[in-house]
Image: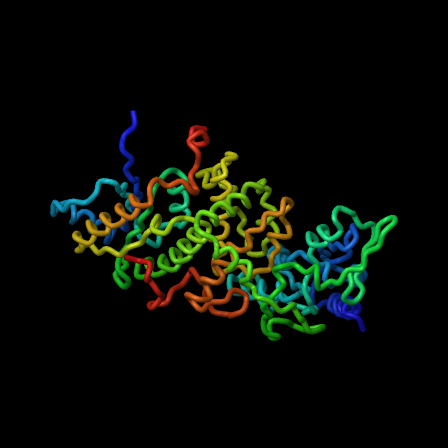
Length: 145
Length: 314
């Protein structure tokens, strides 16, 4: 029995802004697609680019990293350093053939519940249009080992 | 005086005077047209030093082992660029390392020579001016060196003369477009690029020779060796090999000095230089940062500017 395919999206949300933004979207009863799996991290700067590669390898169809707006970082500059790392990561992954839109980045503050819902909607639709991820993915046979 | 004679004399004097305890250079290898690293501690040992187009390891890789000694490093532009990065990352201090600049006009490509000789193994070989002369039992070939240079040498970037302690001759690398290979790769569609990447990593046997040869891969424990947690899977699935290469490239973002040591060290001919070039170009175009040349205070991804471009962020 096969079910209709739904994109699986892993979202790394910073504890201080984007996670609170997601919380606000939730308590405000805003609707957004249930395709995201949220992972709370202390800061977008704490997201090792390796996590994104690994998420894609282990079956995510898309990955989102979201942090505080520049200047709002709880640790002062974590998101600004992250911005450089992610620019490099995105350039590299797309260079070796990852479809544009599989990895995405956003700034969402704790007050932007609506923006969070919008970002999730947009990311989900982009990934849905791209279809199931095939590249960089580990074969199921190998996953079982 | 030839470069080799000048180099030997300089090295012997430095060792005899006690200015340095160690000279890191190359000596003739056991196979024709090959060299091997030489760590010379006496003037007699220093007499074996050579520096020519057959030197193809990046010697700077040895510096991290001798952090507390005063060392002289035989340096071509590759080594000099590495030294800039080492100083930035506090792997070497300029007052402990004397870079003896030797002229470089490009490295002899072992692979290009093998291809040119189509399977014949030379029993003897030497360089004569711009000629590579190699011979077997019943044959001799005289080939122009300019046809057999490493791709990485074209458009080599020379660090400033102030990077060296002394310069024994002027480097004249072959002119060319450093990004030619990258541009070829980028012209392909995403699907083809992925297929080409798969074909390259399919051959990889994960011997980590690239990592060992790389002067910037000096971590005492590499992410790929970690077992708790296991960052890189040990299965033969292609994706695990991809994870290794992609992550290694990212760890070298804004640090790779484009010496090509990884490509030359690979026993199965995996050439992923374009990955490093891609990030090198990104560093240059996006952040105006050129690894190995500009002596900024902080490594590229350890710092930021408030106005870094962020057009890719929602």
